[in-house]
Length: 168
Image 1: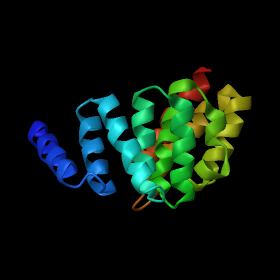
Image 2: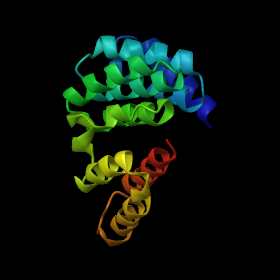
Image 3: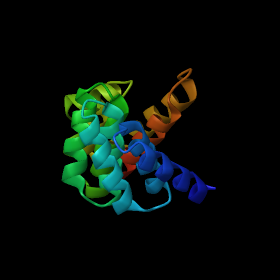
């Protein structure tokens, strides 16, 4: 039960208040159950205690997304990516979807996250020609079925972006 997990992590933090990892785990647990402000507090402390741990920045950026602090989320996520935490690009992608900020998806940081350059080619065509939607979706479907070991979540996300872009 998450309540018990949080209580135990709070004890660990109480016993070891200067341990960034304990603060991180407590912050993640709090975020999972929806205590966003408390999560941000713990995650910010975790970052202060260990500012070069990309995982801390990644989770803090995710918490900022939940708190609708989108600019903070992107800034924090970029720091995480620069420190080698590739997953920290997820809050940037979330921000792009929530706020219709597809410009965030075209920089080198997010471009490196995707396994295939054709995604960006289809996205550019779709932006200039909404009739390209069928071809873009066909490509995404083909990638979902043909790419052995393909990260399915990424291609599902690609389909979502194409659909979102076509409605703009």
